[in-house]
Image (cartoon, rainbow, N blue to C red; front, top):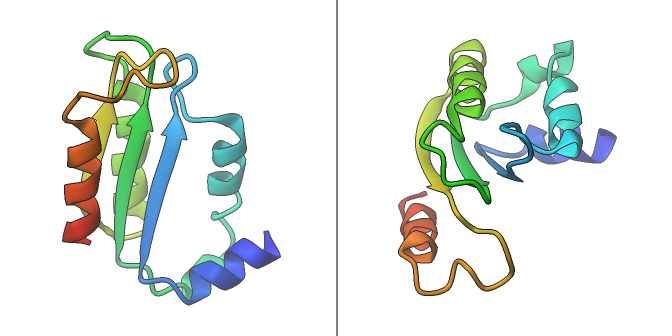
Length: 112
């Protein structure tokens, strides 16, 4: 975490990206996010956050729990939402090709 804290100390934006497993972010990412809740966070100058999620399911509610946590995190850390790319129905390598999702991610990248 020391390396991550050091990088965050120089960052002005945070991008959260994760595959979606059982309607949540990866355990590894969750562990990192949980470690943000310590006094060192007060030294960060991060003002914006973006979210990239990819899941295999096509359920409309697939990202609901994650979006709730994301929005609460924005409020808690007093950050602005820089955008989201939420991708459903990507089960295997190559499934995303031919969809608009890659362009959506590209456009989000350009905007930040």
